[in-house]
Amino acid sequence: MGIASTGSRAACALALAMGMAACSRVGGIDASNVSPISNDDTYATLGYLWSGAQGAIDREREPSASPFTLTLNYQLPCTRGGSGSYQGTLNGSQSGGTGSASLAVTGALAACQFDNTVSVTTISSSGVTVTGTIAMSAGTWGTVNLHMVAPSVTVNGVACPGGVDVTLTGPSPSAQLTSSGTACGRTGDVALP
Image (tube, one colour):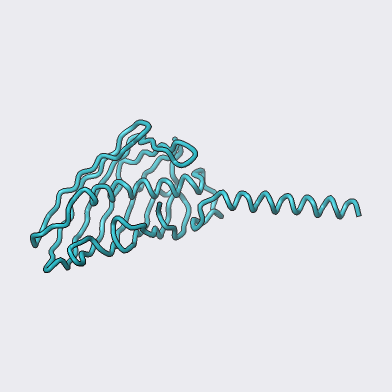
């Protein structure tokens, strides 16, 4: 009985430890692949790479003319050091507040540091691109269907295997978007922060 009890206790302790580890991770990203970038850092990287393009879009008012070309420029708030910037255009047409625009934005981050809930995350990437379409409805930005690619990304000094190649979808640029694809060797669908 002593051996069975010890084995049962060990199994319970292992199950509890695994459950606690699972609870501490952000859900949705496939953790089965071995990656030098943690699940949480992968999630934070996706969110921060998107935040640069989102910031560039949010700084512009919806156009009243048609066709339109909006020039996008945005400096990332790298709150702990480093730098990051996004530039590009939104080109489109609309009539009576309904239409669509094509987004083409490129970004670069050089040791951009930001607070990631419990730690500081540092991201570098020389070639982030975000392309795709954004709908307009009732004079405001609507449904988003974008492709974000960053072939070379470093997170906390570690190379992100495979970089980032995801599709971003959602009801508007300012809403919470869903990322589907591969990031730092992990594949899955997650709602970005």
